[in-house]
Length: 319
Image (cartoon, rainbow, N blue to C red; front, side, top):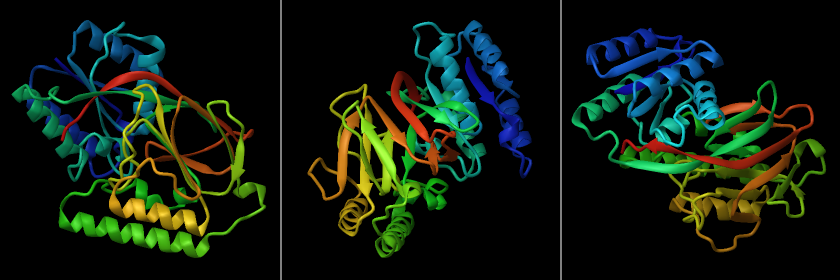
């Protein structure tokens, strides 16, 4: 049995939800589909999935439903010690995590068709990866979030980075990515400055070390092995930690990070204004927007976020 957990509220345009229902109905038997409206529905759905002994769960919806499902799996453990394979399919502008695991079709309906095709062929679970989740505490109106990717700093003003195809694939996509990087770096280089304004600063404390305060081009904490636009982190030394990258908002640091983005990978070599390492937890203090799994959030009134490496979940790779 394959379980599909969907959120109709995530698909309000172009009759998307009806298309998703039609695709599932056409597939016929072997699928249990549960549409949720609130957090309590997720618990009921996962309990039913457990009773049906499903082999995998496909989450079809935005970051809100995926984060809530992650939270329920970790806090309530409806499947006991079993790590149920998961795939996340998001529509619209929330496809950051979907694309991270190979869901790179033009829309969520085609991604779902691809998954069902692999399910029929018995190849859906051929490529699985276990990765720790990231728990973010101190989020305005939410409290805590579970996700895989966090980004703060000046770069989050470039919304298109988190709302477009992310990996290099083919000549056209590669050229588009290069032009995006060059444009991004040019604007950052021209606008780089050191500011004494507290509103522009981020205070960072990694693994309970001494805190540092500065203005940053970007701060990324992630369970994923890449940053964006296909650029890779150095290989992790520990499977239980999170990747950490901070780049100061200075001309030297921006030029060096641009070189790495264009090459498509960071290495462990020391770079001006950079910290590239692994963390188990980190505390950040600032009062600006940030990104989790491609969606934008704000810190609560204290301006303090606490980000920790949480339990591992098993994800399905589609590529």
